[in-house]
Length: 211
Image 1 (cartoon, helix red, strand yellow):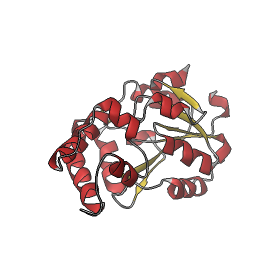
Image 2 (cartoon, rainbow, N blue to C red):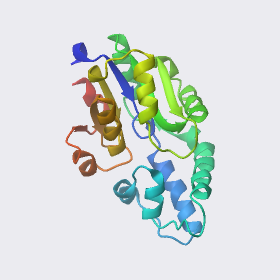
Image 3 (cartoon, one colour):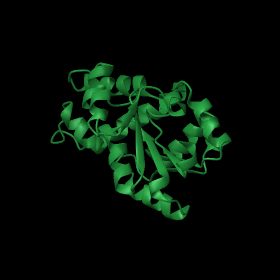
Image 4 (cartoon, helix red, strand yellow):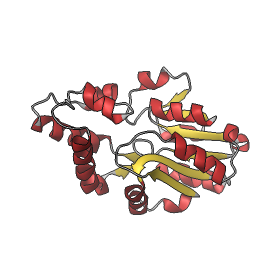
């Protein structure tokens, strides 16, 4: 498998970083404030989607009452205060180390704001595994496609030899737009059956990448 891989583009939240409990806890605090029904982790994995504005509407936020930017920034501020307590998914470091040891180039492509993303990877002490770390220039977690195109161009990568590894249907959509292969991990932000609807390989744990 590794002989045909020109590089790996990693998603961050939910793929390498296990931040699911924090995301559910944070959104539930916001829902409770607005007298809206809270979510279990399983329910969250069924409704979470990109763009996040649509997901917020789906779980009851009314943007006639308040603009999207208010809850979006409220979430980010609380999340950023607590994210230091999140750990990497099991086997993240051993998988990153393996791909590095066999000479495969690794990159991060995230919908997280760039400065927060850089800080997160530094806190987890894994920045050195990546040739480049690409985040967004705002808090609103829109699309990663433009940054992905820039990444491929800047580092002179062959898209067809890249594998994008993520945990959401949006990661599949990004990979498709970029012309990359895609593998999805079912212990992140969306349920396995939702991920399987894409038709790409879906695995349960990161260490299955090494089989």
